[in-house]
Length: 141
Image (cartoon, rainbow, N blue to C red; front, side, top):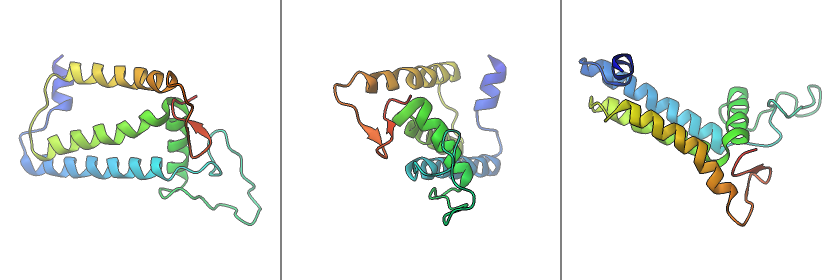
């Protein structure tokens, strides 16, 4: 378990920890913006757009084509649970900025994997069927 603990723990250098924490926080905000500005007409893995039409190359996602592909992939696969990923990345960023190691990395990874597997199932068992942007089921596909 030593390599996992070293990879997930902050270093001894406080400025490096602060830099990495800020980078993780920015990545978290970027992922949140990509997910929250998902649009069904954006080009993605399962949406084709007209390359010569009046809106050729126009992407409604704030992050651009990468955000359109990324948000479509996450929302189609794990549904509304995808919004937990920026929260987890933001929590890790906060711990790195404070230069404080978290608790057991094995438990954190196991909890994250179990949440990504079982929270969409919980959404699927609800008696009503919500859709994100009137297209994607909140439990994913």
